[in-house]
Length: 285
Image 1 (cartoon, one colour):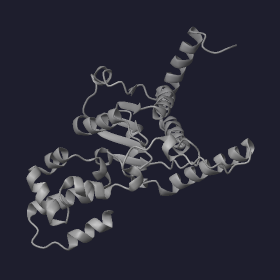
Image 2: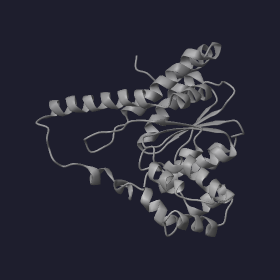
Image 3: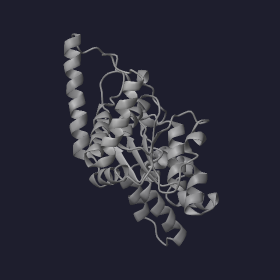
């Protein structure tokens, strides 16, 4: 079932109660998150009993929420498919050079499609939030997304003093978040198959601290309605692994723009950083 199918079923209902309308409004707002939703969370957010949600499901032709949820999940998303499971083992490339040319072509398409389809309003909000000098910025990514998060953090430290890199070790998160406060911002990077730690952090941060910016590669995800800004990246690739190139290009652009709009503090930060490099003899001479 897609959003259009859901709307069609709703259109066939009559004598809707106020509770029915609240449930419909919730699903209209958060339809993409349904495959990852839990009954208890939905009932808490809509402020209804489980039995009430069950009766509504019966009204629209389902045996219960689980039946409804299963109908919204695309066949290839019914389980977290690993790279080796989705890999097409048919070898259509003659040699390494041809493979690299094909790879570069696919990456270029990902970058162009990302730029073409990205939500401009969410992108503008992202830029405003990360460039606000009054807001502390937390950054997290798991597995390959951690590499992107660390890249953003390392360069961002030249520009913004109040930036904290989080890791996916859940036991460490309370230590890293102990100084967090209302009005802070979280930049989270999470690709399919979606880290459970990152997902829980996004939800917690949104409900308890402030704005959340999420960079991901799938509109169907567990955190879209806990994101103040959601930036979708193309990650298509015919090889074994999905591509992170479009996400990297965006991260690189964002951190460079932060530098463009930072004034006096930028020079001060660079001076301190370079003096530390010199003190520790970091680079070969």
